[in-house]
Image 1 (cartoon, chains in turn yellow, green):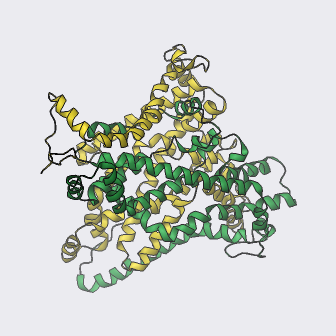
Image 2 (cartoon, rainbow over the protein chains, first blue to last red):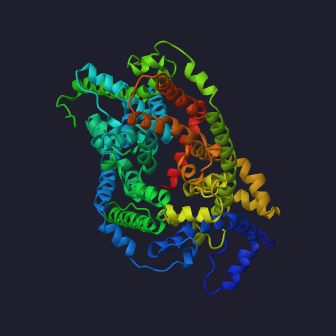
Image 3 (cartoon, helix red, strand yellow):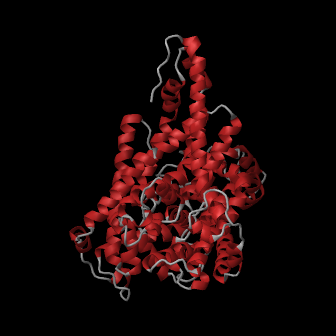
Length: 319
Length: 301
């Protein structure tokens, strides 16, 4: 506890607001830590908070010549134009359904996979299962969509299988009705292994005595999973669910963009891809900034709602 | 779903356990097959005669083995430029990522840093709300980064998630007493970081390098919006052209089994293999580190 010199000590009481000068002394002592932070914090301000400042163009008619600040205000004009447009409901419906189905189907599967891994007694076998299911996570989106196109093409293995059983080949990638199935199915294929890691870790932290006790009480393995394993990982499930909802409106945007074509647009047109095609490709910056803002606001609202709900019902939450 | 506990315990449980094991092991086997099949198919198809692939003759093993597709790729300049660009972007990008993440994570891990909570808030808030695509695009454009490699590197210089993982590691794995002792010996914070923290952080640094490098290698969207000059395309954009754009052309026009179509078709498989190779070769060696990274991240939740 001998800190006479400049170096900081650990147990300094947190400085109170009325002792501003003391805070300054503490800060000055550690000026080199702030020096380290200088670049990263500047980066955060520019690249995360800068775009927030730029978001004002959602309420303006952005004119590159006048700049973000100089362009004139138009209020909620872009928002009303979006809500009144014929594609508004299509975009909203696609965005919500794709993400809702993803949440319902793709969210529980890694949990089930983790429970499965946890039940396998052979260490080697369970390692194989884990290592194999992690592989697709490292494949790029472009390659995943490439694999999808070749697997599902008219000459691909799946259509060959269909034809062997006397069916007609299906143009999966060019069909609006198949789009969501393919998108969500391949997401599950790619991510179930990777997403199960956290659950597997949580499962291994459960006290083995709980299983023993349940066994002595005559609980079958299914019952042990249901009454010991699952409750043991509920906090982790809740946290990941909240985080997933926090990304609700943005899930898989890059992949949707790559899978999109004129023939499946009816099902694949979502808010984020629309912002890209209309904003970046066609240059309607203000209009699409407004749409993006609408997207973010829904997203944040959902996150706050779910977090609040989780805190009330399960006492687990992000904050 | 739920399996009843048999009334006559001792007799039936052993049998039940057996059945249960069989079900578990078979389900696991099916899952492994489903995950592996598309990958094996692509590998086989890449070594097969394209006519046989298009004819649907290839199921699992290569038919009419040939290396034509690979030879063709070897001669394709676009792919090699893309490869070179991707290596460059990945190397420079990852270096900057690591430096920036380190410089942010270490001070923020220090319990004695005044205003730490506020600074941390600046960082974590960005996980939940962002300006969105358009304002970010305009910003990068205004900064004059379009059509330079910096557009792919600087806007993503720090991943907040990785920052939090690294900070958690510093807090939980490096004893604070050690840092205090170094201070008493008159060690400055910079020296502390370089000669004490870094050597103790090799595992987490490895994880971070891998996370960031794979991210750079696999990313395509930033290049799609910021890079217009073809000679600057990273591999993933070249891939997108070969795998996805040429395909939609083939759908629009009349699909004849011309040589050109055949060739284009056969290259697809080989190109998937060639582009994924660096990551997949690394995979067995580094897989453990990746998993560790996810675990460290999950401590914080």
